[in-house]
Length: 136
Ligand SMILES: [Cu+2]
View 1 (cartoon, rainbow, N blue to C red):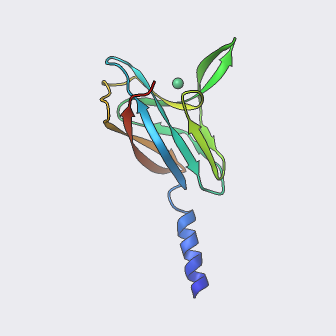
View 2: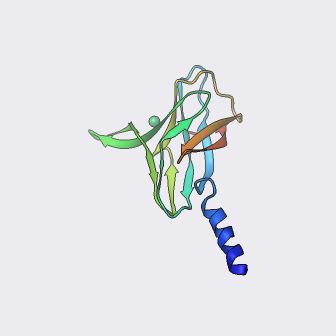
View 3: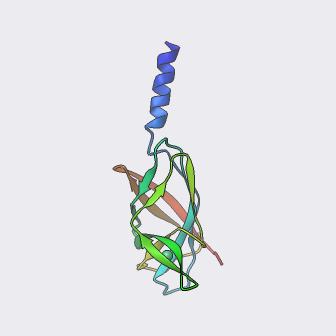
């Protein structure tokens, strides 16, 4: 009986909403009139398989996944179609590397307000509330 209970417990855990953990997420505060901003944070995949993030949405702007690449000695950012997070791996979104980009802001951001960001993974939706903070 104990074995069966344990089995169902494990099953429930592994089928929980994609097994992704979103940590330290923040949106960069921008001056009035800015049309873009950046989102940083860590995504931990506690699943046994890798996960591809593709569709990410917010009501305030379009969202793109960007990477930084060196081109003619200069760092440039480039849109990528999806973000792979390997099994039991953390992907860091940071100013020097991968990040999410808010494109075409519909209004000015307010310091400390929280904005919902929704990730669609494997046909399930996960929404996190991300604060707007001052970042150099
Ligand atoms: Cu970018």
